[in-house]
Image (tube, rainbow, N blue to C red; front, side, top):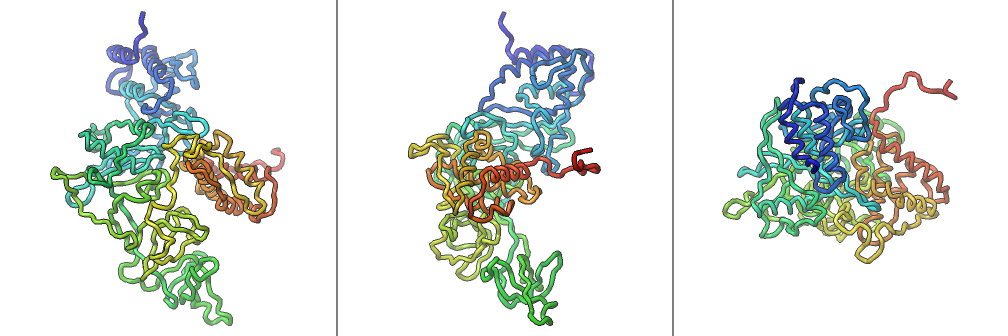
Length: 582
């Protein structure tokens, strides 16, 4: 006798029912038949594959359902001998991030960073979720795709923390409408997203469909299920959207506060220890050793030495016209924005990015008129590649423009490195042409570089007598789980900005270092930024003298433990353990 397929099992059990509370669209079948149906689906999906769709189910609810049905498909949760009552409607509300953006009923379902599999939720195939939801109702549905990850050991995994792209179709007025949401892996780039949209436009595939709203919600537009991960791992379309054959363009909303450069002698207020003090500006950050504003405050003018107050933040007493105004402007997706991974893109805020999709009309013309300007005609908010004082090209953003100079901020770095650069300087280059894009390894061979060298096998430069540090870093980089976690970028969703002392800096710098060590181009790496971070975390490592490798390893692990701690707010303990615990 042939074994029934999951599909036939699903069809058979839907026609059977018994006297039981009805929470979903139809009455659930007898408990043992529910267990048979779900077990068959779980068996068919025993091996994770790219392109599958999985859903999260709260652990408390699923354990109650297992106890009720006697299902043995989940080895992490086994039923007792005594059957339990029906579990009631599915409740996934405890899994959701408190700051979920539900505005516009778009259905952005971000889960808590602290949520852990088995402890907080179980993963079930989409087909199993459809049955459970039909029998018991409830929700909300939290659906995720699979992706191929790992550097040393390749594996398929469920992408629990994807990037949510809110796509709005461009109207004749130049504003987006009919927004819908798509999820993409953090390793995806907007160039690949654009290639997908162009392929869909060329083939006539619909990009969205109307879905019946949930209770209490208005209608919303959601994406049709696209095998984005299969495209990613099979190679993206070569069409980038920047030639005559393209049918789709992407625009991103740039928001910035309008500001004007300060001048020596201006009347300003200095922010010092929570208070604002009026005074005269005597020195700009570019002229100060520690990149601070020097202000001679009015309260100090009567003193003998007239000491200047050195601060990072000042403001004008009398604002200029338009100063402080929030400017919103749609800008084309190009340059570095087009090539950087979504997980490292600064326009992605809290794993959500809002974009406008412009498609050619029936006459083959664009809705919006756009003429690319010369890249050296800078405006506030433009992005540019800059060569720093250590001859390294970095991505930067233009904060201010004056005469023939621009004030740039290096993206991802402290603002103490901000500086004025002449617009004609050879230290500037068009965005995306010089600075390396984040995570360029994702669609290349994972182990062999273009020169035939094994990926990840790079040298670390000594910064003085820092061989103790380099040996420790090489050991950490050669540990499979650690290398996979940081090189894949998984750490970015787990960083705890409220961590003691380092505030996530150790994890960020170590993660960036690991990703640089696994870049596709063979090279040597100078871990200066990491050394600065570990030195600030533990002052004994600030110098360039020889230290103990084991002590550095312990310090690094402690820093990573704090920076990646899932407990954002540690609970208050009224009775802490003191001494030997007695």
